[in-house]
Length: 478
Image (cartoon, rainbow, N blue to C red; front, top):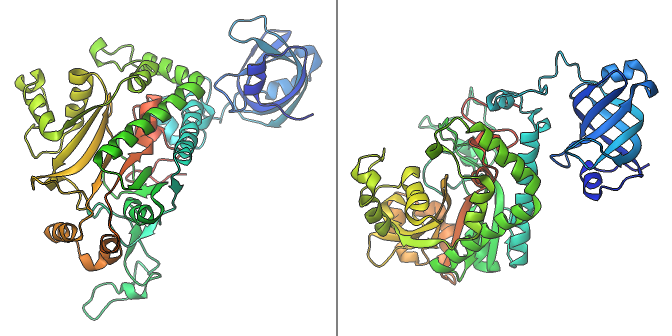
């Protein structure tokens, strides 16, 4: 008999059918005569209740059915007498596929801290919380490809090993095959990278944007979706050393077109989540409420489903950075010195400022534009005022910035002048500058950190809990 997924069995709810299921035991309870086994195969947040008459099975096999063990069960579906499920499976045969010693299996049916589960990240998928998170993550990855495919974008695979630093921040992981203890040296005593595998210094990419622009200025509209790396020594709930980025780049798009696309894109993903992940989202929403029940009311998160609908059902307000600074300076928190970080024209806004604009002032998502050029990257479109650039950041409730992007500078002369100001060697970027030399066009793009977005959709407070195996300072386990 062909195995059926528990998700499909519970959706169909048909009784009287003979089925075969396989999965892992979440819990077992019972009386002298009957064992009730909660079985989960990862296809849904919900378990299938297996009812095993103890008279029909050897004591030995029933003793081995513990949390974490894997089973193959054949039987008949019947209407459930208990609450919480429509059907249950009356077991006729049970095969123990893999044992799990209850003295050694760490994920027992009790409350575990998220820190404990991070230390056991290889097994945390077996909990309800992480099953839900990673099903949502899958759904969002699928929805991203679906959205761009339907918009006529092309998926471009940009290099993971690169010789360029797109952000100019220098926080990059070196890639080398040279002997670390005894590298070849030049006459001047520096490492001779001409003898390295690529014949020059190379790093793991921090962004696929620059290469993405090359694709966009020929194919029209492309997007990248891949891993990126930052050697930033930040041990926080918001930073990872390895994370995934979605970066569309579009020829013939100005800043307004870029903002329109970002808003439509985010709403499309959230709509897909609400339509396809509701069971998991409701579970995660209830988990968040339980976690925050002892916090003061004003410190609790917005209800998860409510928060997603809040983004979906509101137009994003669009204001300039300069207007935002004025609003912040006229705000009560500023006047009462409640902001931790300064509010002055020219400073990079912090999460507390961004959240005030979204949650307190406008009460809807916000797109900030036209930032001071001194705090933005070299490739951004220089505005006529000489002080600002055509940048845009999308701000969401509870998380602050979710997307960063800009119209790109299409003028060769202006781009070269800006690179000179920022000490970016033009000779190393000749290939990038060629897009401005030959058939240059207005073009734009943005970046969405996938894990930051998954945090928003799932309500998870720590970015390490939305990626399977987090890479952080002093941690590369599993």
